[in-house]
Length: 309
Image (tube, rainbow, N blue to C red; front, side):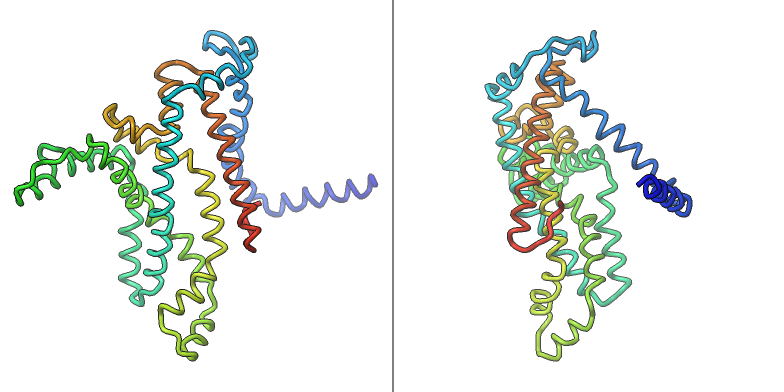
């Protein structure tokens, strides 16, 4: 047994030395996950303690479920959960299919030059900060001097406060989010489509299938496993999206439509200094995200897909 262990250890060391460049390359990623993802798990206990910044976490007295009871009794918390679910429902219904549709359209383009230019244009917004996008939206949609209001004013329509009117706010969030991320999302689907066997399309053409039927019966089934995985990941991130966007565009007039869970956690924790209360809300967020991923993964496997676990 000892010889077997020594042999295995020797093989591992040999493998590491053989591929040392690869392991050096992944070290920054490992450090990132240790420092940013795993070490903060220690501070989950803040949600169960009467924590104050003037003393260590271990020195804070236990509060049990006190802050969770306060959390579920808070009208703002319940409102933030409701708004988060509604906004993400819109993003899944309208935003999730957008990169799939765009990828299929680009995959059908025969002109390589046109395809590259289009890809570059739709990718660029992903690299623009929400701070910059927020400024662009304000310049376009502001009541005074906004481009959109200037244009509709030419038709005799009174200026509209798009960014302060609750009935427009969610639509602006969804549209701007899709515009920013749709190009980046197409990368995965285009990469998957590039691996589809061309002979499948040739056989379909011989059988008389038009382009739409080829897409429906070959392209979409071939990328379905990727679609399912991306949908599971998207569901898991339902409570973790939109914070920067909300932070830039939010104002108190939009509370009933724009207060989301992450903004609620940030405001109560860093603005109101209620660290334990905010930690309880953050832990609730993480638990729900895990449940969503777990349930959606099991559902995917039930219908014959691979899932993520």
